[in-house]
Structures are given as C-alpha cells and as structure tokens.
Amino acid sequence: MNNYKKHLLNCPKHLEITNMIQKSKVKSQKLKVLFLFFIFHFSFFIFDSAWAQPAATKTRILFVFDDSFSMFGDWQSGKKIDVAKKLLGEFLDSLTQKSAPDVEIALRCYGHQSALWPGPRNCEDTRLEVPFGTIPTSAPKMKKVINALVPTGTTPIAYSLGKCAEDFPTAATGKSRNIIILITDGIEECNGDPCAVSLELQKKGIFLKPFVIGIGMDLAFADAFRCVGKYYDATTEVGFKNILNVVISQALNNTTAQVNLLDISGKPSETDVAMTFYDEFSGVIRYNFMHTMNVRGNPDTVYIDPIGTYKLVVHTIPEVEKNNVKLIAGKHNIIAVDAPQGYLYLKVTDTYKKPPCIVRKKGEMQTLNVQEFNAYEKYIVGKYDLEILTLPRIYLPNVDIGQNKTTTIEIAQAGNVIIYKPATGPGSIYLEDKSKLVWVYNLNNQLTQENLTLQPGNYRVIYRMQNATETIYTVEKKFRVESGGSVQVKIY
Image (cartoon, rainbow, N blue to C red; front, side, top):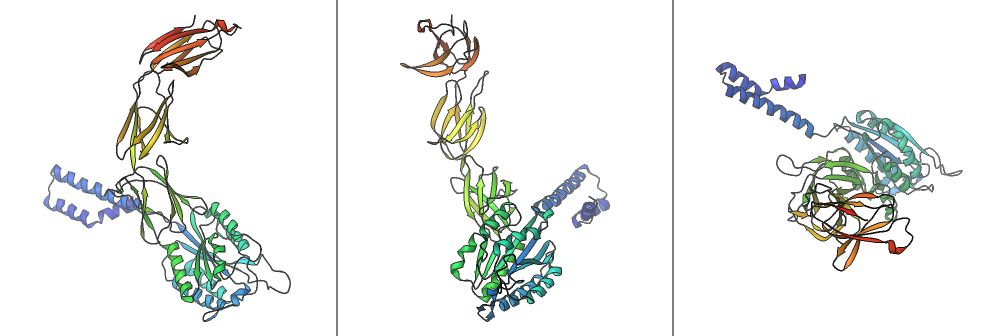
C-alpha cells in the first residue's frame, strides 16, 4: 500500500489537482467531492489493471537431444549431427538475447554413452547433462555439451521420456509450465511405447504435450510421433531453424483468447456460464472460467497456454462442445461457439408441495436437469420433454425454448389428502381418466394413516385388510381432490 500511495502522489494528474486546490484555496464541498471521485476511480484503475494481468508462471523447457548412431547420416550440407549442433548452437545464442527471467532450460541426451557394438543395445542410455537453470546460465553449458557429443548408441525414446519426469522439480509440478522439446532423427528402437509414456506423464501433470522435431526423418515415421506430442517435420536445415523459433514462440509468448458464445443470430451475446478447457490429447482439465462480458460489452479476454490442442466444453444445459481448438501463440484468438439460449420458468402456487421437474431433450431419456418450481433456468434453444414429479406425474412433451424468450409452464395447485384405513393392509390409489383407471400410488401396508399431496381430479382407492383372506373383502372408495383443498378419505 506504501508503494501505491507513492505512485498515486507522484501521478501528474494528482499533483495538478492538488496544486490547483492549494493555489485557489477553494474549499467548496463540490470540489472536494470531485477530488475524492478522482482518487477513487484512479485507484480502481490501478487495481483493475493489476488484476487484468496473468500471474507470472515459471516456464521450464527441457531439450531432449538425439545423439544415437543414426545422427551420422547425411543431411543437406553435412552430417545430421554436425548440422544440428550448428543450428542448435546458434539458436541457443539467440535465446540468450531474450529477456525471460521466468524461464529455465535444461538438456537431456540419449544414445551418447554406449556404442551399438560390440554387445547388446543399451536401452537405458540417457542422461540429464545440464539441469534446469536460467537461460544466461544454462545456454552456454548446453552449447558446450552439444558440441562435444559423438553419436554412438541406440534410440530409447520411451525410456528417456520416462526419465524426464525426474528432471523437473517435483515441488513445482502443477505450478509451472513444464515443456519438452524432443529433437530426433529416428523412431523408438528399444521396444518401448513413447505414446503411452507421454500420455501417462501428461495426465499426471508432469509436463505439457511435448514438441517433437524430426530431423531429416523418413516421412513414413512421422505418424509414430503424432501420438507423442505436437510433431514438426524438419526436412530442411532452414525448416529446422524456423521450427525451433516457432516452438519457442509458443513456449514464451503470452496468448490471449476470447470465447464468443453466439446467439441464434450469430452475435456473441450469451454469457454467465462456466466453461472448461480440456487437453484434447490427455483429457486433463487445463482451465475453468466463468464467462463474462467486459466493461465494453464484449466477451472478456482470458490468458491461455498455446501449447497443445483443446476441447472446449461450455456448461450450458445441455452442454456444448467444440473440439480441436488450436491457438496461435502471441496472438489474440477468437473462439466461436454456438450457444443460443432461452429461459424455462416453472410456476405453481402451492402451500403443500413444490415438486421437482425432470428436463430431457425431446425424444431422449437422459436427464439434463432437475428444475425446481418458481425458478428460472436457461437452456439451449430447442425442444424438451418435461416430467413433473407430482402425484400423478405430469408429462409435457415438445416444450419449445426460444432465443431470449421465457417459456412459462404453470400447473394447478395440488390438494391435500388424508387416507384413513381401519387396519393395516394393501391398497392403491388410481386416477379416473375418462373410462380407465391410471395407477398413481401404492399405500404403505404397515400404516393406517397417510398424508398425500395429489393433483386435482377424481380418484379411487382400492383396499383390503391384511387379515382378510378373501377377495370379497375388497373396499373401493371414490374421492375428489380440489386445487388447494383438503379431503379426508375414510376406508370403512
């Protein structure tokens, strides 16, 4: 608060108003009110701006570098290993020029400690060569290690990804953006399953969806990496360099988005609904937001990590999904979702009981919502089937919900019924519906008195005492229920 006061006191506008008051000696209440009004709104602006910024998050980028024997293969101007060393070294030099205090980098290599022959493959040939540190500290160390590498071994990608989980600080898991950039020229050679390992570690929140950069790789192998992470095919040296910049851009740049919930006219007017961003690959929940409009009446801006592909679920009734949501790093992204809605209002004046109502989509059995009476609820525009849990139940099919309209359903007030039995025994209540009886309720065999709430109508109760072993002892009694009334039914 002290810093805030200093900042406010040094504000030119504040000084201007203060000097004006001191020079003019004006002490009118109106000017005082204006001065306080300015201070209030200026302080609101400061705090509002602070809240509008995303909280600083530590970003950790782990480079996993392939130094297996296949890196001796030819690639444009030379051997793959030599070209990769040169380009990655230049990239690390450029990275040190970036001001990124909240970013740490590290290097893990594989296939560089054991020879392919003589003897069996070493499928555990992987090691963290440079642990996490700031870019100015770690980049020179990484460059030195890379320049000294000599390809010798095999390609244990699955095992290396598994070991990556130990490289990120465990205390920071879930509190930082853990990113892997895998640079390789070949596929798994140790019977591991890189896809399964990657998916499991993403689900645990160890790291985000990895970036995989294939160096001069056979296109037939590309599909093997699409399940591991976001795959980039660097068929040329220039392509490799550009891809590194694209990947780092996604890792470092702030990315904003707004979700436009479109009404029936295609306008982004819908709001006040929760929405969830899932990682489409792993299924992990990444973000939860309550949609709102900003002070300008536009969908508010949110900060979202551009790494990965999302499934967006808008928690309307019923829910609306948008799959394969991809964001452009460093840009303001617009995500449009069709979500036109209207209101359903259930109305009843009832002193006895307000029954719940089951809401389903037309022709479907899945329950979307259980709505209470005398309450409003929003639904996606369309037709719905209602089942009101009165006695007897009320079924209302094809109820139409329109855009920005309120559909009101009103039912009659129920009546109170007290059933008196001379003794315990089985009994049932039926509604007289024209020329047939419709079952409504089975009386409790063990009770001699029950209090029920029934909709208005003509009823019959059919009963027999428990100890009466002949059908002729059946007792039938008619009664009528009036809206808001009360009736006693004595089965004697």
